Image 1 (cartoon, one colour):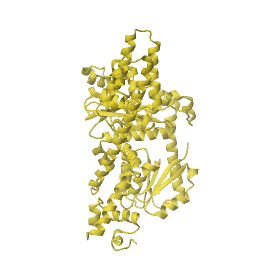
Image 2 (cartoon, helix red, strand yellow; image 1 turned 45 degrees about the horizontal axis):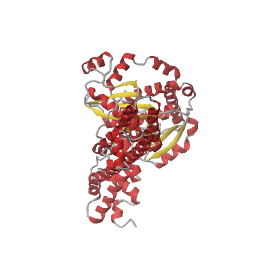
Image 3 (cartoon, helix red, strand yellow; image 1 turned 90 degrees about the horizontal axis):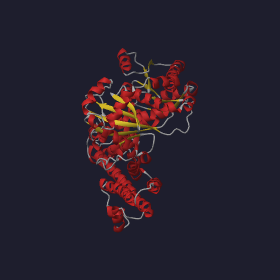
Image 4 (spheres, one colour; image 1 turned 135 degrees about the vertical axis):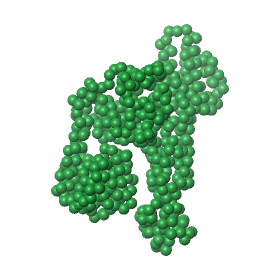
Length: 538
């Protein structure tokens, strides 16, 4: 096993430095990835550092250790948490136990005692990973997988071939507990091609990798929602129920964490496509198809992450469903592929005509069906047809299906590549418009202390994970930093132009606590708000 990542949180810098300095971290199996001076600071850094263990003091300004623990448990349930407390208070201990704190330690703690605790945690982490990688356990899981009839039923359900009258009875018969939810959504998990695995057991038994991924997904989803998991033609498939106790945004965030967990524990990259939600299980096939469509964006968004269809499909007007495999692959190449991919696909299609010994009329019908695929795609995405063709004559030739066979591939490639360019431009333009809308929303609502990335993403209909990535790419800074900058600029304006008290200005720019506002202000400008107003800034 490699070194586990650990993060320290304490409002006293000397305490943090002393703990870091006095422990032989590598000998204990850990590496310190960073430290934070309060709970708010720690939450902002968790996403960046991705620690396996957090050591936190219980008494800190702005956000105490128990509140921090509660927030960590919501987003990162697998992180081990150690709490230091200088207060032998039974109520604190009870709350810590309720929050599933790994260790509750009374101060002062010496290096020897902390080393024993860390060794215990290292052993626990080792055992968790060992269980994930244990070949015998994976084989037993494989043998004990769901019955064939259950798998067939779920596949028929997402392929829309199930009689609607038998859906509820079959769910009860196969003990699939996802009925009576507010809505449902499908996700498809694709295990990326594994080139090199350090773990000897998995590298020798790569056929078991999908089983280990499926086991990991089940373990991560169980505490959060009701779900059914099975293997479809497109990959490991999940149908999740959205109840009163969970949210679609939370589920997408959890899928994002599962991608990280697979990479960390199994050393396997997985991509998860998440489809549109539906309000009836009879429509789950539509959700499944849009999840498959989301996976098609891997070439654009990147592999090894969660791709939510609402994030990547700017048109959001539904999809034409083609039953013929060739049509599906051509559509995918035009929407997601490079010029080389499109050319290879079209050449492959036209090569079929060379091999087929049929009447010329059959060739013309075949070419017309390929051309019709492009025309329908243009209509679906509202592309300007005059810009897609070289000339009016080319358009008419292709529509009539009478162009010479030897010219057909070159003409189709030219049109398909123009379509691909237009779709990519539209996708980029839509992303920029959404980011401008996000910035405008922040400028209008910065004074709301409850403004969060989750609130903003509900307004934008995007997942927080995708939004955070795109926002930083477009603006060069994180959402939190951008919001803080807006608030502090407004605070400076109020300090210069009004006689408002500091606590009033704090409330007007979105800070409920005057002390935390002063802390953030001083961190930015080097002086407190009061000194800034008095001319202490320079």
